[in-house]
Amino acid sequence: MLMTIFQSQLLATPLDEIIDPSSIIFHLIALVILTVGLYLLLFKPVKKMVKQRQEKIRKIEKENADLNEEVKEMKSSIELVLSDAKKEAAVIQENAVKVANQKADDIVASARRQAKSMVERTEQEMEEEYRKLQEDIEAQIADVSLAVAEKVLGRKLTPEDDKKLIEECLAKWSKE
Amino acid sequence: MAKRSDSLAKVTLAREPDAELREKISAFVRKRGCTGVCYTIDPKIVGGIIIGIGDTILDGSVRGRLEHIKQSL
Image (cartoon, rainbow over all chains, first blue to last red; front, side, top):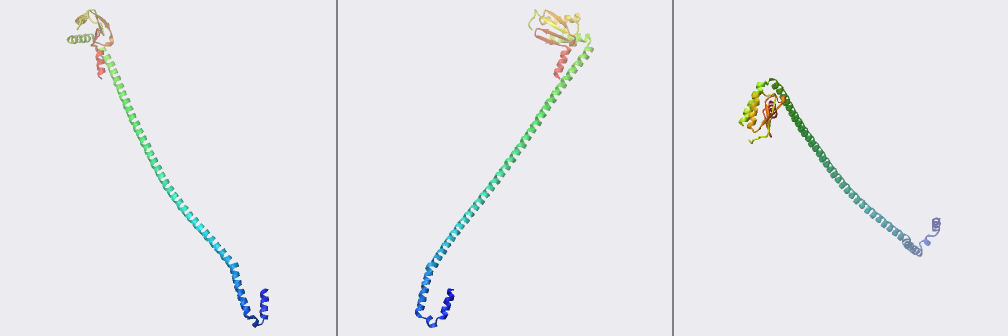
């Protein structure tokens, strides 16, 4: 609206009036004042605001960078801890396997010793039983032989033989 | 050997001895210092003679010999 009015006045005004030097100076001064005013009132605050925004962005970026660095450090720390934990778990597992193998070997060795001991004890008992049985059999054989000899001699020993035997004993004891 | 003037010899036989054998036994025990003989008949000794004079036992029985063989076995 203003521009339309301005343009219509401009077109209606003669050219010599338009090119008036004072008017030019006036316009120049107005332009300068406008420029200075714009600079003071608009450009400077905007520039300040932009600067503040940039500062804020830089601060946020710095914070982001710090956070990223911290995250990286935490990540590397966690990886290190995980790596150590894995190593420790591997060592624990290896030790557990060694202990289990050792225990298994001990159990097997103990069982073998017990089995060997049992076999030896059983063999000794069998030998003892065999010896006792042999002695019993020998004793029984001796008893039976004695009984048989007594029966046979009792039947076959005549009074004359008995008398002769007694006389031999007396003669033998007399010489001693 | 010391005299055993008051002791009897204990003689064990399987059967009754005749007079001759009794005399020989009496003569034997007298030499050992005994004044008399006490006879015991035990068929279990099978044959031979066992003479006990004091603590001394002279075993010439068949059973004693068999026992000796048994011990040897």
